[in-house]
Length: 231
Image 1 (tube, rainbow, N blue to C red):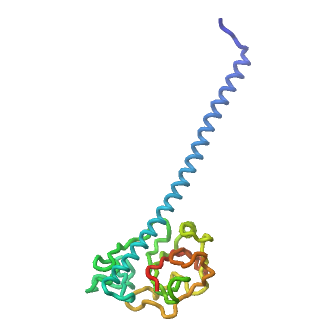
Image 2 (cartoon, rainbow, N blue to C red):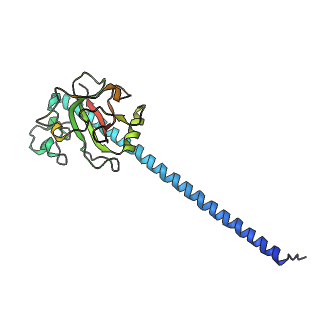
Image 3 (cartoon, one colour):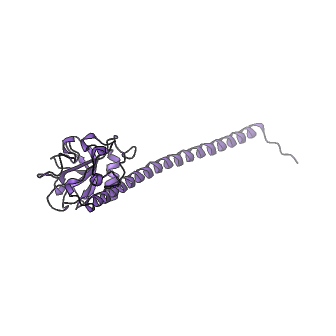
């Protein structure tokens, strides 16, 4: 038996079916877009976590290098950071006849000279200073620190959160910035400051402040620091 619907009713049913199919397609596209957006966000977050881990692994490698150099019988002021890819201020590695005090030589600290991980700063290389005494770290003497300059705010905030700071970014004291001028680089002519830059305890919610990221108040730039040697 064949049932025949009126022409208008057939048209109406066809329109309803078309609308249903269109809705299914749109919902599918929207779901895919949301999933893709969430996937991209997760990738960015995962990359940030990976970059933080890379930075922390590297600072641990540098710390071990300090230990090796001291075990070689050198004093804290003998430590050197020369490398062909480093700023010439740090010295000429090839001209050093005794490389057992050199961080980036297998006879010294045996650490690799590494560029900053991509995408977390403006490409500035790691710097090494002895001009700052960190809050509640050792005595009031200047500590030997590694600084990764000009990181992004998002990296700075994430880095501090992984360390357990209460605030996203630790404001630095209005004194000398933890990322300082070329004249402060730890080299043959400049080692530890006798009157170090003393950041205020109130600027840091995590103490002793062995590592972290600060916002330099003079120009609102962000810099990661890590104490390589407590003094």
